[in-house]
Length: 623
Image 1 (spheres, helix red, strand yellow):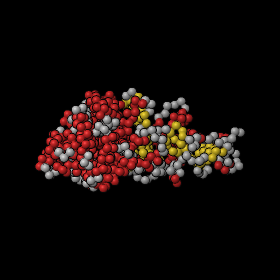
Image 2: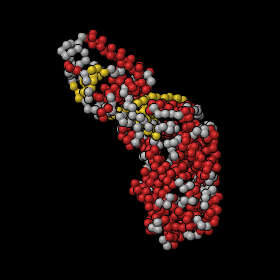
Image 3: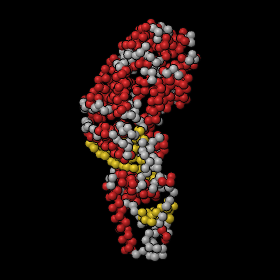
Image 4: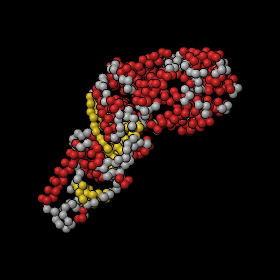
């Protein structure tokens, strides 16, 4: 008689020949496909089993959704008690597959005391064995039906789902199943949309896109990712597009103990992609059992149909916008306009267009040329959907930097926070600083860092350092900028701002050193050149100042140079008359950095001049 194979792991024994799972010698009812999945994993214990291999082994020659595989893995984790007593049996490798972690001993002959059926020493009649096996299969099938139709809350109780509340979550980059690199922008866009929809639920802390996207293509265990992000649960999944059909498969995984809580596949026509995204977000919010207010539910359920070509153009525009170069921003404007031409009611495309124009202002075009377009686009987005937090936040930025409407900007930022409490946004943070509420601004940047823990921390040091500079806490600002430079020595922004702080401290040699580094790293940044001229003058290095001045003035003949930057230059040259004339032009041109006139120490030499006081009044700022 051919020997049987049995695998021992923990309290379990898996009979590979009879297809029976025992726990402490007693049969465990396992649906057939669950058991086949477990057997493949145990046979390959310690090794990654790719999803495709599992699907082919368990469902040979049959097309099966990945969501079904995830459900079987979830069932197995519950049956095995995965995660209890710090034992992990099945590990998920994001986007790739699964690994059986527990050590398993393989035996070639089933010990008599572990065989199901009669007592040791007695033979098992063949007919009786067949009846027992048929009964087990029928019972398992009934159990599978009950699991499928019972509400998720009862399924959780049946399988012993942990009661640890889930209050924070991260959406990992959805895997592009089309295998077409050109479609990566589409998968990334679906990830962004899911993050945005979940962030509308105020009871959930949702990790921002910047941190989540760092795990694109990562090969880390889910538990490790959750620990690095500091969240209770993760969403992983796939997106596939075939023509005008889109399918998203999403899995919800609790981090500790690691448990698959939910898995589902959704397929829609591309016209209904917003409905698809909202359906996934709503299901996740329901599964983690957080409170969704009626207003939040209304926003999630109000998705409209889209024009497929218009939505695709929007996603391409968003991908270009995120590259944040003058060239990519110009391409983003083109894509957003294409999206609007195809679908004039697409609010998200108007928000993207407004933000792209805002970023181009002062970099490639005079603000007076592009900011009216930015405002018109922001207003149109809110006409189409007044419940978009991103639209209110963008309008707040425009009211602040272009219109100098302080109360209007504050109202828009407040409305954005009401709609999306988890995202204060950089515009709101620096608005607080510009009006002198420095402590609140510093607290908000700390909250933003909690939501984006894997964004380059050097950027947070730089941002916090700027706030401390405006608050005139120079020693603390120096500490922040130094920390940022330790982590990212090539960050030109930290060098420039550190140089400005050194100027205020009277540390002239140190200021010149840092500003020279910034110029080397950003040789065409006119504001950096202007600040270096001032540092040379303060240090008595007039020849160097004159050389840098000529270099900067030559740039004005080649391209647009902000009058704000030139005003900083003439402050450094002690030419207050020329500096005030240029600031007057800057106010007329609605240049963004002017909002810091009241708090930036660089303007201290002008503060007693009545002309400067008049500029403050024109901007609505108190003297």
